[in-house]
Length: 288
Image 1 (tube, rainbow, N blue to C red):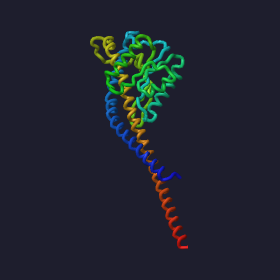
Image 2: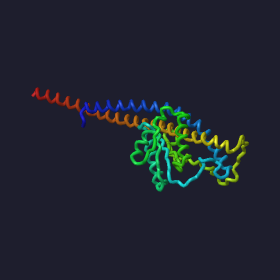
Image 3: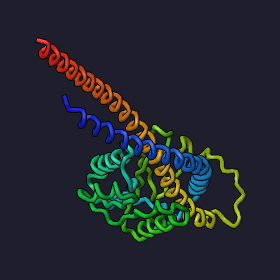
Image 4: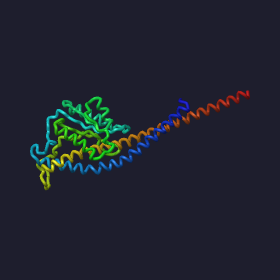
């Protein structure tokens, strides 16, 4: 059994850890509320914008939907992998890394794959196995639509120039504080509307000035919104995962502290008992 000093040092260390994990939990809980409100408010707008764009594209013939709708033979793929800059958030980052590796091995084994990293954790791990062409790790310092639009413009340019035949986003979709769902979402080319009977699509719109001009204006906005939504989803998921992880860490530290306190009390009681026995034994020896 460890001596009393060692046990006291371990208890002190665990109490310090509990203070840190508890503080991180509260910070993440505060940030989560704001991030959750932002993504929940944004989803209806993003979904409706995408639906409108797909409906308009479905009414156009051939390649009139623009370069961003062109389907090509997939030989060069870019995966935009969205993770966090910091750890201590459970399986948040590892799930995205695993999903990325799975996608490359199962879906694009015959293609050349590059990675654009958003978030330091995923970039650091994947760069050891795959070609990371660029990383945007500072985006979380000021996560705004305008800053995200710069990345979206870069992706649209790479696709339009033919550098890549397909671009996909891999990120965690926020469901609740305890659940994050890894998503592989096609960014470019724009997917056509998926309906059982495409001829029965209800398009009750009045177009001004024209469908093509509207689509040309909507496509960049829709793609920028899609990327921004993915980053917002990932940002909320990160804080939810960290809050949950720190809550569990605090609970585990509390259990360990209680066990050590019990061990410490038993050890101290044993030491006191031994001292009493020694005193009694010494007194009896003097009496004899």
